[in-house]
Image (cartoon, rainbow, N blue to C red; front, side):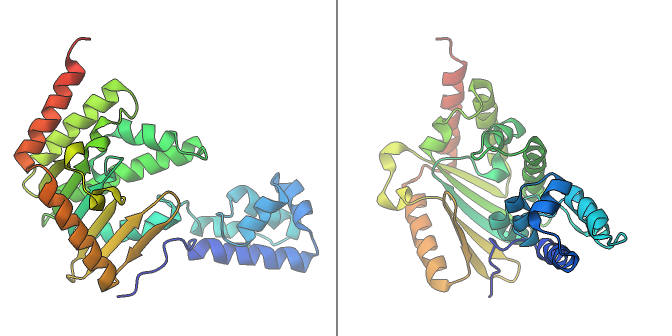
Length: 276
């Protein structure tokens, strides 16, 4: 199975950017001149021409007027849209929507499928480099939309193992933290969901190597996702998939059972509610 590179910008961005550059060169206008008209820096114009950034309506309208394109460039606005997810995540999300089963291990953050709105907003809103407010709202909404997978029909088998550090991080403050823990308990009651906790004292080297996801498609093919600070790898390579399966199996063996895990989280909720 061939998996597209999730780091490649949308084709519509690249096509519109290429047309923009062709019109600019044909008109004998520099990036600096276009930048003055559109109120963008030349480097930003370059990024949009290369399709690395989405050509904005502001730029397309300014270029259309400056190049006397008679609406041909402005028309591209109807075919461009800001992606809901970062480019490196978009391909995985497409497969996630069609998954037959999914196994997820996290070492630091609550998986997106389990996040409350407040937790997601605290996480995305404090991203570095800082995102525009509109982008934050788009991504929070998109993250919540993904959670329809929890109740999809036919049910998708979903297994989550969370390292204790995930549960200890008070993302967004105490109330958001408490709400998030209660959300985990609620989701764990679903028949198609299993949720396990890996306590600190049970950690093994396999558990400290970073997060990973195993995804089974409806065609019963397997994909493995490895996620890092700035690099994600989604692959169907049998060697990588097998390695992930072995690691996850070892982690599950050390993790608490589902009932013990629920008790662990309930105790944490009670600790948060207890007076100082």
